[in-house]
Image (cartoon, rainbow, N blue to C red; front, side, top):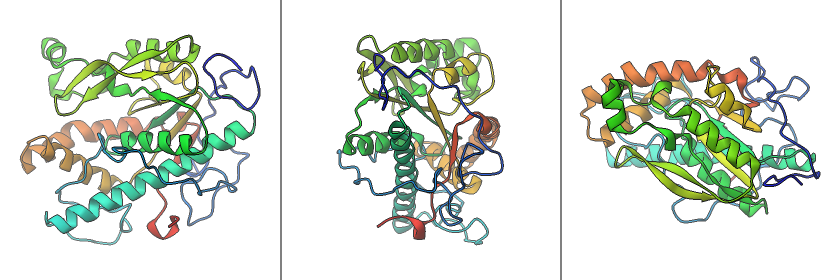
Amino acid sequence: MGAGRVSGRAGEGTHAPTPADEGDAATSRPDTSPGDEGDAATSRPDASDGADRPTRPGVHRTDDGEPGRGPFGGAGTAVPADSGEGPVDGGADRDAAHSTVHLGASESVARQVVDLVGDRLAQGRSLRVLGITGPPGTGKSTVAGMVAELLEARGVTVAGLAPMDGFHLSNTVLEDAGLADHKGAPDTFDVWGYVALLQRLQRGERTVFAPGYRRDLHEPIAASSAVEPNGVVITEGNYLGLDVEGWREARGCIDLLVHVETSGTELLRRLIARQEAFGRDHVDAAHWVRTVDAANITLVSGGRDRADVVIRPRPPEARPT
């Protein structure tokens, strides 16, 4: 087995990405049968969903799409997109319901990602870096933590987490460069620093300390978590499938890239709630989402075909109990 890789067959290297199939959100490869109609997220028809539930304290804490008050009705996870559900009333019961729905959707996605990893390893294919991408508000941080827990429960070694958000430029740099008004866009990240980290992680020569991002401080923090030389590395972020210089090189360092899709209505609700949680009033929160996040959603969705697999949360009635 190559240094730092998990593999079912010794010595197998990184595999070139296969573009996702535009017509089938459940599978990425044309020779793979689509999932059942009610199982919109699994990428292979024989995928199991029987992993143990995550138990590590704190795994459900989310840095991406915190539930909270907003004007939208949670379509896409709790109810059909055309349900016509009215505005969120901001009450505690509704907030708790949105929180439960969000975590249920994230767990649905996480279980499917774990099935994909297990299937790949069972085929004897190596996997060092697993990438999880999707528009802002998709819940990528939550999913990544759940995937780590579920993989460990199945006996798969997890080297650690290395989020793209650790490469946000600092607020001082953004101010000096005149970029603070669209923080979170692709040009507000140190993409080549991210590429260098992924290359080091692929080599698996020694423990690497990856940076993280503190949403309470709104700043990246150096050396936030250790990533070991052996096992699966989980990285997540908006722009892992972006077809632009720098981000293309990052994509080339990822062995398996999963794009997570969520209803546009639900994304907007989560993103407005996130900005309100940061202290913006509702009008300012909605303005930020409309002028900054909406453009990023469109940009990230355009890279969908560069993922190996596209996954959607299963509807509640299709999830295991």
